[in-house]
Image (cartoon, rainbow, N blue to C red; front, side, top):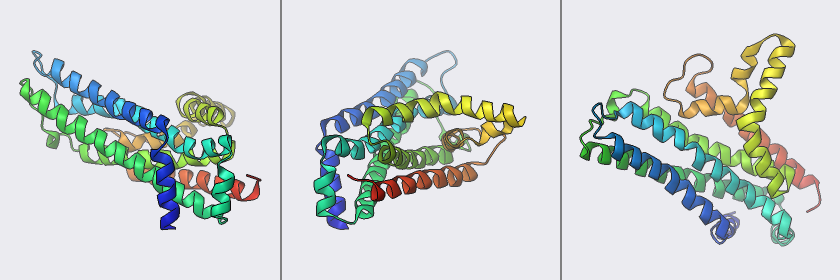
Length: 252
């Protein structure tokens, strides 16, 4: 298993696209947070910890989605270029290959988000303080749980990306599904279901909507942060499990 994980890590880190997306995932939210801290730190009413965290958490959806794309491409690119065949020949136990990919993409996604949080939270606070603002994250009771929730969300979204990639087997189709569904389609589907059953609480329990509560500063109404994590985690594992089943049943 260790050798399979090492093999998957080599595949991940030797693809140029993955590093391009990783650089964007780190640079974009970091630049927004640091510039916001710089330009708003010396305002007549300077930025505070709560406002800085809102900016950080809002822009961090970008690296979460990009890491989900990296996770999906880790399997769809193999199907697209036919390299999945030698992979399964070397490791006939296909579930072991999927488990190794899951370990690599989840840990990589978590590591990237940890780096983003270190830069944006610590760097943003330092820049804003240097500009004259008072930044004390201890004044925001949900700061730690929201930041940890974001990191957890990144790992779970990577699992979703891998699972959808195993089902779709096409990089363009998978990316389209992963971007369109959580940002647009899920709300429309939830609204339609709520309209049919005259219960609009259904929207609040749509998987990605619940998952995005993990990094919310205020969780008002609906499931708690812990419930959201367990629920979305179960959805991510289920998607990955179904994808693994399809990989084992279908030809490479």
